Image 1 (cartoon, helix red, strand yellow):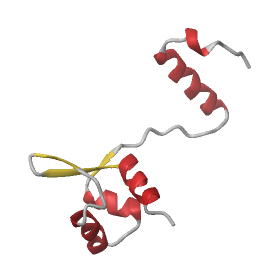
Image 2: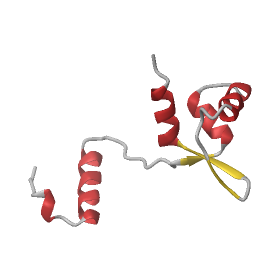
Image 3: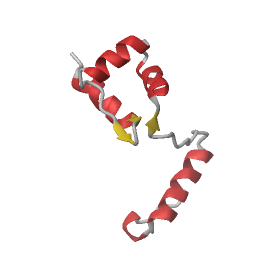
Length: 86
């Protein structure tokens, strides 16, 4: 395996190189969609619709809204769950 100094590699080349290594190792590299609708978000969290909307209404689940359409960030959902971890 060749080793390169990362500081001298443009971002696009670095991403390509990492994908090639992952592919050679048999590791799937799937870029997931960051933003989800309510159904996708509640399924991601593994909760019922009623629980999900209770959490949203209580401000426990962060969301972004444009023209009345709410979208939930996978990263922020994960952070919210970790924040409430015991």
